[in-house]
Length: 353
Ligand code: UD1
Image 1 (cartoon, rainbow, N blue to C red):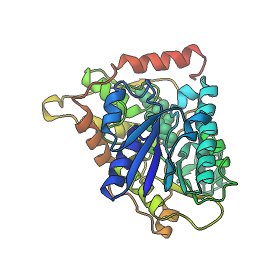
Image 2 (image 1 turned 60 degrees about the vertical axis):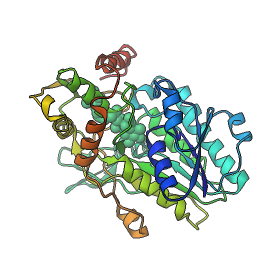
Image 3 (image 1 turned 120 degrees about the vertical axis):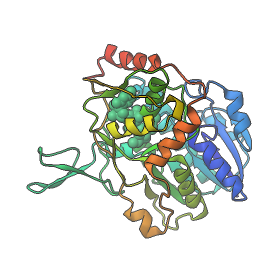
């Protein structure tokens, strides 16, 4: 297959492209090479195993001159939860208009589309308690515990980012080509941006460890995330391409490990991944803040994936974090102060509580 990957020069896109080429497919990319993510755009283009067209997915003209592929994978997106709360127009443009245009392109060329949405569409997700049963949208009382999200859970986004991902999904409902919507949890692994202080707690922890600074944990650190290895995400996306759905409606798939990790455990896993000669004690600094748009708990239910015979993840979160740190430790990245700056910016705008 000739596969067009939007956002192909990015973290997940590069992994997917290599995975597809290894499987005998050809790839091209449509990517803006946004400076917030790509400090070395030429290096990103050189690393992609195919031609990269540098253009904005939200720009209609970007799509018109493209050669017809056999399938499209749409990964290009703005991904910062906090930043989305004050750059709403930009997030809407890229994530909603860009997704609608990707859908239109797939439809016009008559080819299947696989698109990355996000678990952010679930917002706080489902909770269960012995007294009140289950409820979507946060806990009903102190006894309630979070439950993994299933694909048919209601959309209850609490960030602009989550809203744009939900609206992007809706824009694909009327297409009559095979569509798969994948909802990744927090994707981690080698190659994720170390320069983008608007996203990614793991890159923040890494920068702080390298500078011998305490790791800033917002709140008590008992929040949980489902952190999935980028190679497992690439495997799932490749499977989706190779097994397009027959149904008229989009097929929706979760993408995660199904295992929760607390932020405190994540801090420890990141510290454990340091090279042996840098593995001293480390400290955690709890900051009494909550970013607007943040959720407390996230975890994917993988039952539907298993029932379809789609590949389940083969790497643990611990492996994913270890691979990330081993790859990133000696590479250039933003200073830890950049994450302080991003948080200050949110505070100035009244977006921390
Ligand atoms: C992430 C993704 C988003 C994805 C979503 C799905 C990234 C870069 N963003 O958002 O694209 O769709 O998961 O679940 O992965 N935190 C700290 N200290 C810090 C920085 C952050 O404690 O220095 C906390 C945050 O408040 C939050 C948690 O870490 O509770 C995770 O934040 P972050 O890594 O930015 O990702 P998500 O908002 O979960």
